[in-house]
Length: 198
Image 1 (cartoon, rainbow, N blue to C red):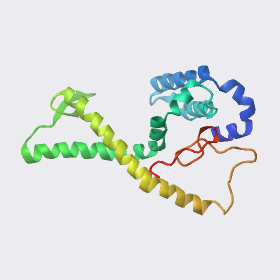
Image 2 (cartoon, one colour):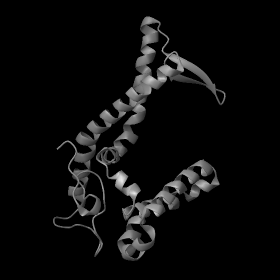
Image 3 (cartoon, rainbow, N blue to C red):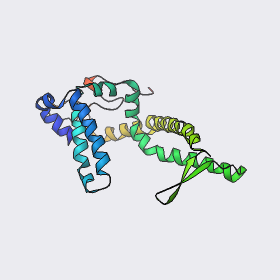
Image 4 (cartoon, rainbow, N blue to C red):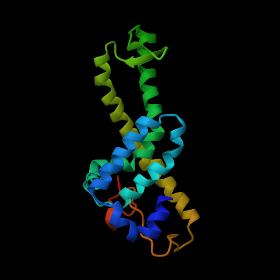
């Protein structure tokens, strides 16, 4: 939805939806919406709220967009879907490995806390142990996500595109510009982003 609005009315909307104030306001809207909506009835508005935010940032006219173009953030954006797909597996593996310490050598690797009536495990025998362990788990998530992005997601995306698109067909609406996107896709302002891992 945001893409079609951007493609058809970008020249008109760009004057009122671009700029630092609009971008920071959009981020504040997201924070407020997530805090208030939760799982309640208001959450049904989530697609429209986030569509508006995507539309605002499509113009890349403010300081928030400039921050998002920093290479580390571009990298995280590129592997974000892989992070979404692999984070639970990596976290579960870390907890299973910690559990094996207890099974094999009777080392208690967890701290237990009662949260909402349920026993919740945290890595480490003290809470501060978890403060040290979770950055390691996060680094592992990012590393695994890069590998799945490089060797599964990118080849899979290319495989699908090669079969969906007719030879020489761009499938873009008339007068539309390529969307800012992942590494290997057209980058912000139409400049290509360097391929990750190429």
